[in-house]
Structure formats: C-alpha cells, structure tokens
Length: 464
Image (cartoon, rainbow, N blue to C red; front, side, top):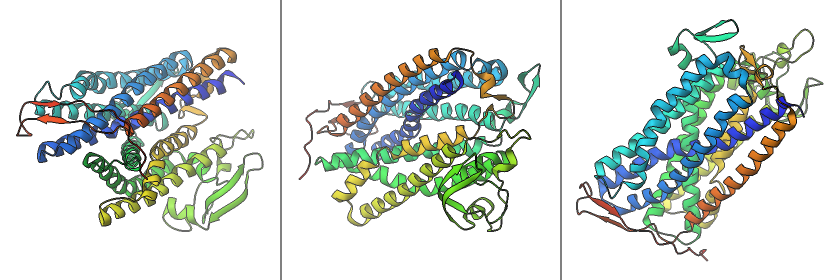
C-alpha cells in the first residue's frame, strides 16, 4: 500500500478518534451551565449533584480531546507538508486564532470550573463554567471555519503556487461555513443528549431512582427530542448548499450517474464505478429530486458529468460516500423515534420502563456513530482535493516510504484502542456509582460560599 493511502488512513484514524471528544465537550459545557443556573435559581441540590457527576465526564473528554488534537496537528508537518506550504498563510492564522481565543479561555478557567466550587464565590464559578463553554464553542468555530474553507475556498489569491489571504471575512465566513458550524453544534448537542440519557438509563437499570439521575435523564431526553428535528432541517439546508458548491459530492452521496430529473432516493444499492451503474437498487421514485430540488422533476447532477476526457474520475469514491451518508441519516431517524418515544413516556408517566431504559442505554453513543458517518461523508466527498481546486491530497502528501507510515499508523491505532477502552471503562464505572455526593451550602443558594462533599463509591446493583 502506498504512502498516500496510508497517510490518508492514518489521518482519518486520528481525526476519527479526536472528534469523539470535542463532540461531547462543545455541548456538555452548556448543559453544565444549565445545571448550575437551575441550582442557583431553585436551590435544589439535585441540580448541583448532576453537575458534579457530568463535570467529570467533561474533564475526561476534554483531556483526551486536547491530547489527540496535538498529535493530529503534528501530522500537518510530518504527513502533509504540502498543505502548509501551499495554504499555510490561511490555515496557520486560523489555527492560531483558536489558541489565542478559545484555548486560552479553556486553559484559564477550566481549573476554576473543575475545582473552584468550594474556593470561589458561586457567581465566579458560574462565570468560569460559562467561559469554558464559550471557549469550546469558539474552538469549534475556528476549526469549522478552516475546514469549511478547505471545501469552499474564497478570499485569497495564488501567487507563485502559494495562497495569500485577501479578505479574512470572506475566508472565515465562506459559503459553507455557517451551515457546517450549525450542523456541528447540533451534532454535539445530540451526542451529549443521548450520552446523558443513556448513562442515566444505565443507572436506572442498576436501581438508581435518585432525583439527580432523573434530572439528567429528562435533560438528555428532552434535549434530544428538541434538537433532532432542528438537525434534520439544518441538514437539509446544508445539503442544498453542498449541491450548489460541490455537486459531485451530492451525486456520489445519491449514487446518481446521469444528470436528469425525477431522480429516485436510493435506499439501498451497490454502486459500481467501473460499470457506472448501481446493482440491486431499491429506491423511492423522484425522492432525491424532491429533497434536493423540492419538486419531483428537479434535475440532479450525475457522476458522469465529472469524468475527464481521458476517463479519469473527477469525483469522490462513490461506495464509501453512499454508505456513510445513509448510516448518518439512518441513525438520525432512529434518534428521532427513540427521543420522541422517551419524551412521551416521561411526559405521560414521569418515568421510563425497563425496555426503554435498555434502548436508551444502547443508544448512549449513537451520536458518535452519526457524527463519524457525517464527517466521513464530508471529508471523503472532497476527494481528490485537499483544498478544493487548490491542492490535491497527492500533491500535499509527504514523500516518505509507505513502511514508515504503516509503522506510525499501527502505533496510533494501538494507542487509541487502549485510550478508548480506558475512556469507556471509566464512564461505565462512573455510571454505576451508588451516590452523586452531598452538597454543603449556605442557606441562601446564591450566597458566596459553597462547598462540595465527597461522593461515595459503592457500586449499584442491577435492578430485578
């Protein structure tokens, strides 16, 4: 296997591992702020106990996100030197802005958020929680701005084969950036919603009927039920934007070979790039035209329009894009059904039953699956370009032997496998702890001195 393919696989593995944790911290910071706000408004200890449980998940996820982000950034120089050589004048400042703004806020105030509850006033602790949440969102903003620019670049000019910025506003707010940013924030919200509902349901299975568990369960279920229809709408808007600026990606997502109207929405098929056709196709007549053009006879671009005169395909690989897009949509539809069913059950009965608890626990990491599938759709859909129309992956890859890349790739895989097992084990251990802990506070919950007692650690036992 050559160095190009191995380098792409290695970077894909790195970004796949890394994205798992910012997907949690971006939204979880705001949920923690909501818990703290509810505690200060009501004086109900259950909100603060839920805060202390979930801030541990935030801290663990934040730590792994930082570590994996650093190793990923190294690869810009070791595996993709052509990227920074060609577009470093644009990419470098955007990455620096993230450090100077977002990461600075996180680094300064994270310690207060994690350990300052009994050491600073309640208002300062709340402010620290807000600034950390804001910092994670700003971090996402700058990274999405860069990633979106790689898909829909503008605001620059090429001089001697090097990109030079001419309009930073156009670079940051490039045509796809607003859609991708909203899509990512909603994906993070859904990931946290189902993780919170899933771990709370696991505690329910193990016999926990405490108020902090129910507050986290209701927050997760209701948040998921609210966000999933919004995400479906945002995804539709994002798809229309992609159709305008990257029609070859949409053609591959739909496995549509010929430009035509009345294009079916293909539910299942085996796309064959050599034969330029689909095998075993099952579709909904005119479905793709309705979704993409909002009328049945809408014309949708076909893959055969993106073939060079010498027969070289100038579109992304079809099969992986076709599959990943359907995984993302399928998981999203499952999220819709489960969250609405759980919300209805909580609204009618103020509780869940055992089958629903197992379903929610099984869906705890469904947000990860949908997010990874969505990122694969996005990034594979840009091929063969690293920056659309500017530099290809083949031009940017480092000229190193494939064996060297294979060695580092295997090392990364082994390390990440260990880390993800440790992470999931810690989450499981947290989920089956017996108590959330005791809160010692002033009579006035909005007072200036609050201290946290220690949580006990007896394991819960599965309910009969």
